[in-house]
Length: 269
Ligand SMILES: Nc1ncnc2c1ncn2[C@@H]1O[C@H](COP(=O)(O)OP(=O)(O)OP(=O)(O)O)[C@@H](O)[C@H]1O
Image: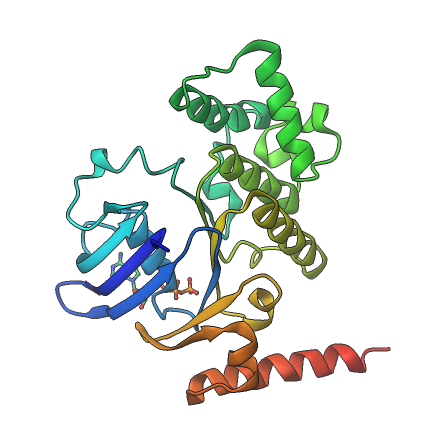
């Protein structure tokens, strides 16, 4: 099957440092891949490179194709059509995705209208209002009438992340990139958002690139994991395989930490 995202020999450098070296990674349509690694290992930069959003101080070499389009070396304006159709991103901190001065309903409306216009079915009036409410229901936002009229600072962090997920879903992307989407949330909300992402991605048959420093967080959601350490993928394989037989020492420490975490949970009264 043709890969939806194919990264081959990706190297990311500043003028002085190599941040990511010779990285290879593929995601098939509908596949869920976890990109795991410690802080600073290059996970976010890899995701930014995949969407063509690297800062200008970082130079990319190698090849990245997304939905058949080469990303590296392609001018930004030629990539805009991919963002919000082929790919959408949910970030760690939902406030980065939200305009502080715009009501939530309006913010959800924008990607809905953009996608509808691209599909040749412009959306407005009561049909748009209904689509906003449907999407809010999909991400289990309570009290939709109030929240649609609220500003981002008037809702909770977990609700803001649900809004950010709703905005990403409004794009109906082939690939959803979730970059540590639960790290900023408390443990209970974290679990709820993970369940939500899991079920939405499955229902819509989207591919998922789930970035995390935490193996247990991704274990229940992804099919396959790539383990990144200091800018290099040290191991990749099906999640069950990685847990059962980690090949690299670093992966083994991640798996041991995950088992210790499970044991601690099991020991709770
Ligand atoms: N604009 C930049 N210029 C130079 N170096 C950068 C830039 N952005 C990130 N880096 C460096 O590149 C490395 C990888 O960063 P990246 O944000 O991809 O890590 P990460 O694995 O996503 O970490 P975290 O889990 O903390 O988000 C880090 O050492 C970081 O300091």
